[in-house]
Length: 325
Image 1 (cartoon, rainbow, N blue to C red):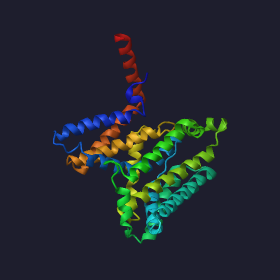
Image 2 (cartoon, rainbow, N blue to C red; image 1 turned 30 degrees about the horizontal axis):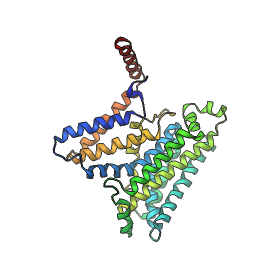
Image 3 (cartoon, rainbow, N blue to C red; image 1 turned 90 degrees about the vertical axis):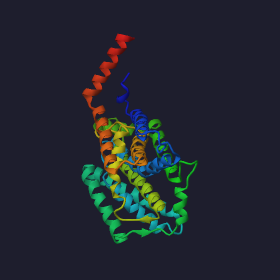
Image 4 (tube, rainbow, N blue to C red; image 1 turned 180 degrees about the vertical axis):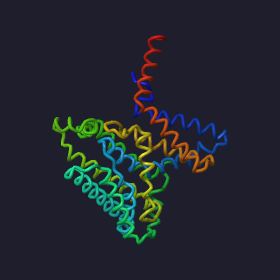
C-alpha cells in the first residue's frame, strides 16, 4: 500500500482538510471563514481557474505544456463580448470555436514539424494576446447585457453559480473519458512512453492535436464566461491565468514528466488554490502573504513528489506494519 502523500488524486483533498483546519484556527472563532459567502467565493474562483487548469493539466499528462491558455482566455473573452450581444450562447460558441481552431493549429504545427510545445505555444500566447490587443485597441470593452452578467453570477443553492456548474460539468466529463474510455488510456500511454505508444498502435499525432484543441476550447470557455460575468473584455486583463492554472494542476497531482494525474485530482488542486485565496482573504490576510502560503504548499507538493522521500515514506509504513501489525 502506498503512503497517502504518494496518492496523487487523494493528496489535494488531504491538503484541503489541513488548510480548512489551519484557516479555522487562524480565524480564532470569529466566524469569518465558515460562511456561505466564503464558499461562494471559493467556487467562483474555481469557475475561473478550473477550465484553464483542466486543459493545461491534460497537455501536461501527455508530457507537453500549453503556454497559450492565458492569451486564448483574453482573446475568447473579447470574441464572446463582441459577438454575443444579441445572442450570448452564440458569443460563447464563437469563442469556443476560436479556441478549438487555435488549439488545432498549434497541435498540428507541433506534430507535422516535430516541434516542442513550449516554443509553439509561447508563440500562441503572444499571438493571441496581440490579436486581442488589436481588437480592443488596448481598451476595455463593456458588455451591455447586465442581465447576462447577473445570470452567470446568480447564486444557486447559496454557494454555486452557472459558471461553477459549467466548470464542474467539464471536469466530470473529462474524468469519465480519462477513466472509462480507450482515449483516456491512450492519453496516459502517450505521456508515459510516447515511443511505446506508437509501437502499440496509439494514434499519437491525432491525440496530441486533439488535446491541444481541447485545451484551447476550455481556455476559451473560461474566458468567455468570465468576461460575461464581469460585463467587460480586455486584451490583457486575463493573461495572468497561466500561473494559478499551472499551480493548481501541479497541486492536483499532475506531473511535469507526463503520464500522471487525473481530472479529479485537478479539481482538488483548483479547490486548494481557491480555498487558500478566499479563506485567507476572508480572515484579512494580505495578498503577499497569500502568495507566500501558496508557494509553501507548492513546495510541500514538490517534496512529496521527490522519489527518495516517497520510497522512505513507503519503507517506514512497511516497517510499522510489520513491527506493530
